[in-house]
Length: 345
Image (cartoon, rainbow, N blue to C red; front, side):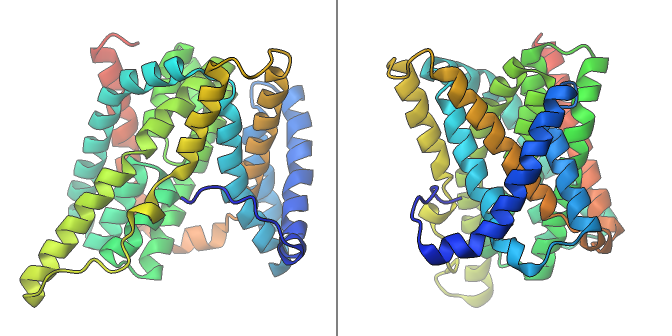
């Protein structure tokens, strides 16, 4: 995860414009439909419309750069914009409150990935990628872990497509289950923030449930995302130690870079929150910033839907999907059980 870049050149504009405009156009439609169907919400409608357009109309290659840009950078900007609506005290309080649940669900994710992976016969590198993706932050964690464990492109594609499948299911299913279980806004926010993989899906499910649940889920998820750093450091140490044993040399972990894997947009989120805490944002402007954040989220999710190739996901095979399902269910259930044990729900 790199810090959002504001550098704009004419060539980049030409390259990204078709896909970005497509995502914005569909996002506007999703925003309007979300106002008409608030129980579903614009974010969910955006990702579904994106998937439909991608797999029925198959936009050409020229749309891909703008779609990729919207799915990554626009999402980061939306999270930063959300920071203008949250005080630092609220962010710190929520992060500390959720840390115990996050640590439990992460432990469950890695144990489940190891146990189920062995049982299903999924090889080690793919097992690690699915475990990391489920435990921390989906595709971003997979991307960070790939060069460390030196997984090949096929394994990375398997893991990302598997994780993405359950992201989509979570966005559609979690709000419904939350209402059926009569979870409070904070209870659902904690559940979504600790049990859904990608930041985009957490944000979509949270704000589909309620504004308060979305705020809470976003902070919980950002707290969880920062744990990518110690996890990747542990992976790097394990890989280095294994190579040292096998090759009898000072184990190199390749292109591992802490600066490259660090989720820099989280720092900008905290800066935005500090600006809000300092009272530098006029009260009249705050609703505008929140509406902007909401629209940016919808555009980003629409772009992620436009990136979803259902054929490739189906071609990933049954075993990785079963592994992803098992780990995801284990995390979702453990999150609820921990909340029940500590009296959160």
